[in-house]
Structures are given as structure tokens and as C-alpha cells.
Amino acid sequence: MPHTPREIKDDGFKIILGNHELFLQFLNDFVKFDILKDVTPNDIEDITERFIMMGIDSKDGDTVKKINLRGKEPLYIVGIAEHQQTVNFRMSFRFLQYSVFIWHDYEKEQNAIHKGASELKAFKYPPIIPIVYYTGESEWTSPINFIDKVYFNDIFERFIPKFEYMLIDSNNYTQEDLIKNKDILSLFLIIDKIKRAEQISSLKDIPQAFFDELEATTPEHLKKLVREVVAMFLTKLDIPEEDRDKVINKIMTRRFSEMFGLIDGYSVVETRRQAKAEAERERDEEKRRADEAERQWQEAERRLKLAIKTLLKGNTITEVAIIMNMPEKDIEKVVHDE
Image 1 (cartoon, rainbow, N blue to C red):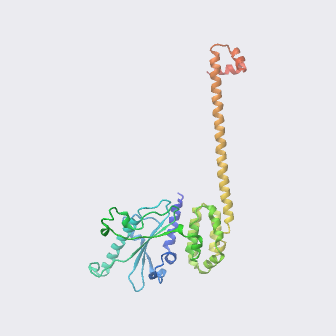
Image 2 (tube, one colour):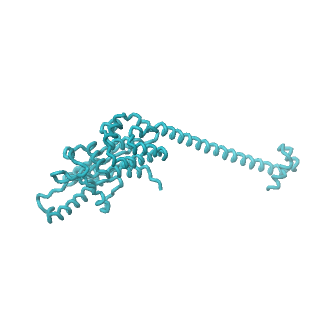
Image 3 (cartoon, rainbow, N blue to C red):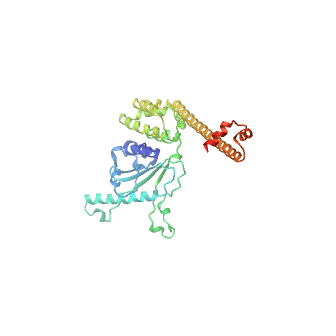
């Protein structure tokens, strides 16, 4: 069964967030806490699988990372890629679910290392950074702070958990903003901002220097991943497979600057698609007119037969033929059909 555009997006971001080098680019580009500046891909541990079976309302675009800070206690990041066109108003609750399970898992882990560790006064739970990366076109209006999802919060404020999640709304970043990051993740996010095939022409505005930077800095082992993700995003745009393969070939030969040399071709494809749709509409209209003409002819024939039958009640066939200005054989046929 073909994937829906949302499933394609989820798969694409699952690949991106599952790669620690790209996830680190994501942190450097958008999160920017000083405590994370020295983190390397080897310091990142993906523990998403631990929480799949715990009853959390998880999606394919969810990821849970443990960040092992050198010489410090670890911290955790819960990232959710949200692609729905409608806003998810349960987001803060989903993060609360994740937080409780992460803290519970951390407590078990520490107790396994030092029996009774969580019962000590000095024991503390790790910080969790909740992040939403939103790509929908509607304005994000879901409450950022969990307390705003609880009624009577003005009366019982001190008894209600208060925490915010970080919202990264792709609508707030232009293509120029993303280009400044000068990394392969930026290329993915630029492509992902394109909603329709005819918008691909905007990629012509990407400066050559950006592609030069990618060619110089993208390691060989990331090429396959780049190929997979770009193919998924192009599939989302209904780009023909033949043209997708040509773009992917540019990636595999590290010719990033030529990746979208087929833009004009995509415009042709889109024009052909529109022409095909217009031709189908014309065929449908022609069929509708033919059906209407057939209906009118049948109605006229019905009325004619009714008139002939009415006249025959007081006249001969010859007299009716003269009145209707029709051959007698046609009048006889009406009589015979009845």
C-alpha cells in the first residue's frame, strides 16, 4: 500500500533523527544550549525503543535521546516531529508521559548500579528537554506550558506540574535562514518546506556556495542516508520516479549543486499533470453533455408517443399521420410497440 504524505514525512524524519550526526546538527542549529556545545555523536544514545511498549502515545516521528555529558550527569531530549495540518492539543500531556517514564527508567537504572540510590536525599532526576518540530501550515496554537491544560489552574497552581516544551515551527524559518546553517540537515529542511511540485523552483535561489560547503563537509558514509531522505521528500511531492533517480544519482556522485538541475523538468511535469487534469475535466463535461442530450431525446420521444396515443383515441392512423406530419409506418410502429 502506498505511503501517505504524512507517513513519508514521518519515515524521513525518523531516518534523520535516528542518525546521531544529523541529530547533533539539529541541536546545534536550533537548541543551542552551552552545555551541549561539546557533545559529539558518540555521546548520544538513542533509547526510543525503551518507551514504545510503555503505553505512551508515541508516533513514528518521536525520538528519545540520552545525552552523556562528559564529566557530568546525563540529560535527556524528547523530540517529536509533528506533520499534521491540524494542531495537536495533547502535546504537553505527551511530553508529561515521556518525562514520567524517563524518570522512572532512570531511577531503576541508578538503583541497579547503587542499591537504594533513589531513596537518598542527594538523589536527583535528570533534566529533560522536550522539543516539537512542527511542519504544518496552520498556526500552532496548542498551549506550550502543561499547566494551561489543567482547569482551575489559577486556584491550584502550586499543585500542578509546570513545564514548557520548545516549539520549533518551520514556518518561522525562511530558506535563507536555513542556508546560513551550512549543513546537510538544512538541505533536508529546505526540501521539506516545499509543499507542492511547482514550488521546487524556489530551490534555484540556493547559492552555489551552500552546495560547495555540502560537497566539502558531507562525509562519504552519509551519502546513502542523504539519498534515502531526499528520495522520500521527492516522493511526497509526486515527482516521477525517473526524475527522482536522476536527482539521487547527482547525490551519489557528490554533485550537490546539480541535484535540482531538473527543476524546469519538474515544471514541465507539473504542467503536463495540470493539462491531463484539464483534459479529464473536458472529457467529463463532454460525457455530461452527451448524457443530457440523450436524456432530452428520450424525453422528447416519450412525449411524442404520448401525443400519438392520445390522438389515436379519436382518429385513424392515416388521420394522425397527417396531423403529426409523420409517415404512417412510424405511427404504426408506436401502436405496435405499445
